[in-house]
Length: 271
Image (cartoon, rainbow, N blue to C red; front, side, top):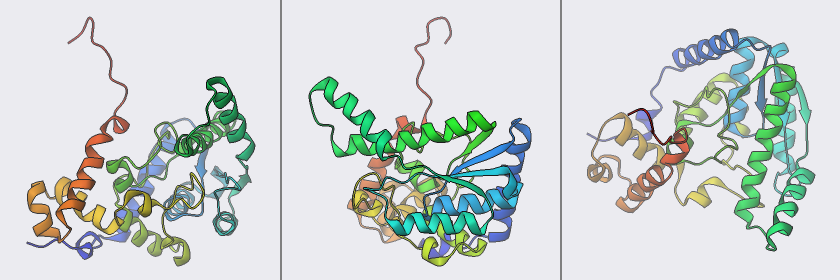
């Protein structure tokens, strides 16, 4: 038995789309909300998410937030995001987060007498965006729709209480490579569908460079272990992914388990 990326892409786009649309409609109609609130970055995940939301509930029931930081967000991403939501006729706002990030960072930095690391500041960016999304959700009685995919969730490639702070995850059961394929099927422009992934948390930030692994390899390993039930030691043979890469991917899964769980409670009166 050999598992390839082609195997992952052999899914019925129409059936998957219908399931996701039904999922979004169900939560929209049963949550007592009036709006879906979506952060749109110009990347494939958020673009696919907002396409699906538009088809599920109509553009008039969506508010999109574009939240760039001028130091980390390329102009092309901002343009792609604006063009996308404009084409879909969705109400949107552009909120630059530079000042908010700086004020927060400087407050903490001065209190501790040390400069914050670039990763700490990067996570402040992600959490600032979450605060903005939930502020708008509170004000307009909305549900925050997340854009993380199955690959990111399993390897923990998201900021805890940042882009991981959402109400629903329509793409949470699709791997990154599958999301790209679905994006093309839905009509997301190919320049967005195949744009290299990046959370844009610091200048020049690229997902695969930080991970040190290509998403095609990540997805093959995760699919083999979690969907096919293949023992980790057999994954290199079955997928062709080198053992050191398999080990790295599974280590990311192991060390980020806390991100996928609610906070543990000390049991006092219950077992």
